[in-house]
Length: 334
Ligand code: KG4
Ligand code: ZN
Image 1: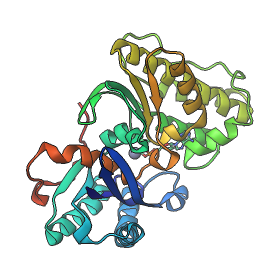
Image 2: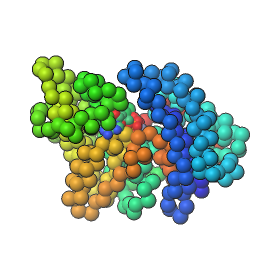
Image 3: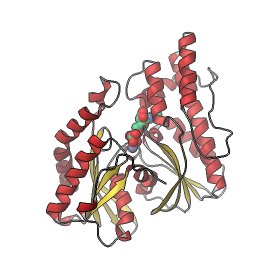
């Protein structure tokens, strides 16, 4: 089957055509227009500005995705759109575009949870995967641990109590005047620094549950920066290592607790090379457990993961009427 995926939950306007045949994914096109340059002036996303930009770009992005994949409305089986969580103003642009297309083309339309789509995004790589899996989703808005029993059964077993991992990267980047978006900037600076230079806390490391927290770490960086002059690369490296330590330990603990056979890593922060490397290394030392992470283009926001999630859900219901699809800014994973 061939699906058209649409994503506008934050600051990326994205459309993708994904083919799923005999258990294998082929991404026929994956178009992402990023608004990062627009938001770098304000140091963050202004919802109205983002929505206006999505409205300008959604048609050209959809058109490009269809052309690159060489498909027409007649060769598409269904549409899928991010319905939440995200910014209401931006979600609405994608959802309304999808509803119009589904109504005119008379095709099924599946509402997709953005975080669940991140969670199963490693499956796009077509690697052999055994279930259950523990999936660490780390993005700008969410940091969650999901128990994935199958591609259609996802349960949240832990989440951040305050800031998301990506949010912490973005805030620390601001403190260190490294610019926006913070994740890649901190990672780049960290590459030139010493990760043992500053002693920073590892929040929630010893708790028995699978929840996470990053606000304390960010505050510790803030106090240290305010107190005395710091070496920016050394602080970036020390902060990054503290985040990686917490994420690796929490993921491994959850993987052991639920006796999973695979570990997934996804979301924008999964683009961080140190996190990928250190988590992969730790999992490789566990017996009977494999590690899966998507290619970089499927870590940050994209529509291929939205279509991929929909391929699994499609058979769960007889009908997917566009009338039922509405934006839901607070749609959480339970
Ligand atoms: O998944 P995503 O594209 O959007 C959301 O759903 O939030 O994630 C964006 C987040 C941002 O906070 C960004 O700073 C972070 O992912 N990020 C990184 C890296 N690349 C992006 N964080 C750490 N290291 C990176 N290389
Ligand atoms: Zn995301």
